[in-house]
Length: 113
Length: 113
Image 1 (cartoon, rainbow over the protein chains, first blue to last red):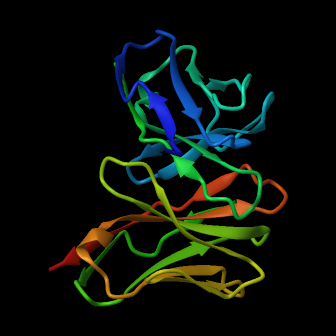
Image 2 (image 1 turned 120 degrees about the vertical axis):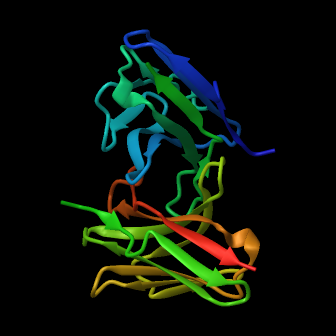
């Protein structure tokens, strides 16, 4: 089954404690992205990657890091989480063509105390 | 600055009626537009897309209309069903940068039985 998986699905942490949210896709997609979703603000792109070792900033990259060492994985790293990073996070992937469907993961709900 | 916005935050329709969800965008460089549906507790799901060289595209029970003159996008859902109840997002892709998507804030569609 074609899918994007994220782990963990729910996470409660404290300010300053480094965390990683993993994302994996089994569709051999070139493009992967991370978004955060907040009430009244919709989905905002954090980082995206167009291929292995190619990443670029989205609209809200501050406080986040990503890496793309393998095609299937695109982890999101919060080196020093802060309460304003409490949000719902989605990973997404799609193939190279402009008409390719973007598939979203199930989401990771993060609470930073 | 660039933005993608929706005219109404909530739309309530009677089951069986047609629904129209609107979206305005401000970046004239955008040349690819997508509609997503997000059900409660799930990630966004692709519905339909349209390129800027088209005015209209039809899918199964859905139609997307693009008016580049006024930078307006709409999603029409025919014979709306209870299963159509969700939040709908439009997104735009900036020409020449296929990894970056900008989402609107979303419209909640409520279908009354």
